[in-house]
Image (cartoon, rainbow, N blue to C red; front, side):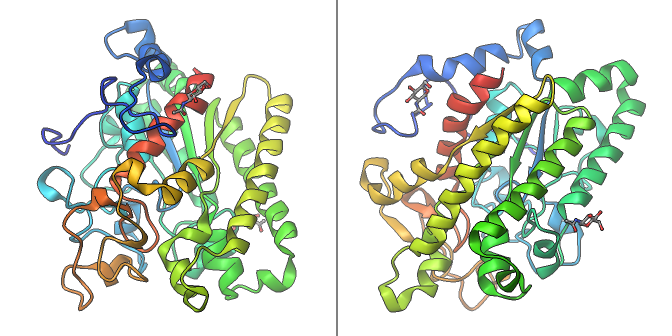
Length: 375
Ligand SMILES: *[C@@H]1O[C@H](CO)[C@@H](O)[C@H](O)[C@H]1NC(C)=O
Ligand SMILES: *[C@@H]1O[C@H](CO)[C@@H](O)[C@H](O)[C@H]1NC(C)=O
């Protein structure tokens, strides 16, 4: 386990409501999920024994370290604000939203990656991430950068359950699987690494609307699969304003580096349809508590009024030039390296991924909304 002595835990005193002025402390809003899952209450701890994560780089805690892909981040300056400045394979200077959520649920402060050799099933009892940077809902997306497809994440989940049964016994394993909180964060790469960069041909096969429907059919298959495997409390994260990622602004330099409206519109359309799908699945699958976790408006608000969050730069990532670098191009030994001194002044850590500060805000909002409804 990684020492957590230097991390700042989310306490109720520090929870800054995401969409409000940064100095406005509202304890009651976020106390609900915390109380329901406080580890000191035996009944409460039983209510959320684990946090189980599926998705892409927004929630990959290091699975890509173990596979043959160029999309990695297990080298400095990634992880420089983690304890021991350890680059774990998280695409961030520090912790991910799921790490903050885990801690707030009374679980460990870092959700371990399933393929990380430093962890065993004993650690995964309280949570695990099957996520892989670069993956998507569409099988074609994971092929682009040779990462773990979503169906394979589900295979790992099955394997995990078998290991869990051997480790804690049938009854306890069943309890963990049915009471765990599940977080799913995926979909950005289907648009930005697949549809809009034209490598897979999906843009010829589908209109944007048709592609959204195709992706949501895949999401429905995935959600039904994990439901059949026992998942009940599931939060599905909506898409962010993906046209405002620094890499997309760079692609839009001819128009002054503004956000790409077309991409943001595709994300909003996807989110509307996702919410309808979530309603349908909740009606169809007994005992499912599937919730939508919105991030679009909150993130856009920060991008539009950064100073109220103490943020100075919304257009570029903190690492290197901030315009296009991520993964190896951000590496300490890369010719581009020149990371900013204080990532808290940035929305984005690299050209594609938010800083720890933003991940913390996303976690707080998710705890307040979808997760508090689910408990
Ligand atoms: C938290 O949830 C409450 C009730 O749904 C809502 O009124 C409030 O605006 C939310 N606050 C944040 C920061 O998300
Ligand atoms: C994606 O790939 C998996 C594994 O090969 C396959 O089972 C699944 O049907 C594929 N999905 C689609 C929509 O083609």
